[in-house]
Amino acid sequence: MTFDPPASLRYQARDGKCYITINRPESMNALNLELQSALPRAVRAFEDDDDLYVAIITGEGGRAFSAGADIKEMTSFVGTDDDPRRSGARPDGPTLMAIGECRKPLIAAVDGYCFAAGLELSLLCDIRIATRNSTFAIPEVKRSLIAGPGTTHLPRLVPLGDALLMALTGNPIGAERAYTIGLVQGLADDREGLLAAADAIADAIAANPPLAVRDNKRVVTVGVNLPLEYAIHFREKYFDQILQTEDAAEGAAAFAEKRRPEWKRR
Image (cartoon, helix red, strand yellow):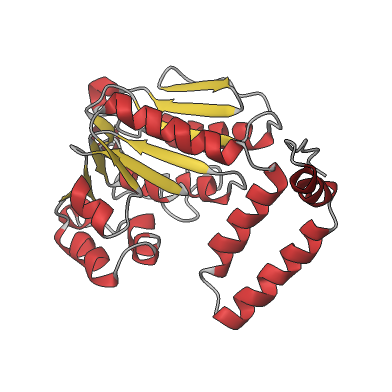
């Protein structure tokens, strides 16, 4: 899939990694309709590229990962039948939810404000790391709105009381608290350290066989929402499939022969 990013989004590929950067620092990387359409397309392009193994999503400028949807733009359609965010309003309307369907790993590198749609974008990623000065919020309730993944995905990642505290007050929490409750998986002192940490995680993932990474992600993300008995059956289905791959045989052979494996993705 060929992807031609708008100026508001940078898409770079190198060393098996994809870097997707929200590039509206003058607007705190607010997600306008253009970005809400371009981000899922960028993730699909990454997913379709066999030479890329993991993606890092971040925001430009150091002040915000994303402060949320573009409120100024929203005022032209909010409360009308033409609101493109409404279910069924526009079948081709922008939706970030498609990002959560990506089969490859996504890492959110958060630096600064991570609010509303910005936080929800990070929730659609698999791993989140942040600078210590970052803050997180789902303030939609303050605008008489209901958060998207903030109300559905967040309670699956953090204790219910913490999710409700954020959803009902709309107030932000700091990076240390976000780390304590499991919203983020690592903290960095500054932006340089953040990007280095994201690269280190990405490199560790990319060193593993792509088929196993993909299937482990699916077993974990689907299985966590199933009763344990069904999750075990779901896992066994994928376990049986991967046992029949050449990569599984190569992994065992390389270990026995004390050499680096050569993954063939089959």
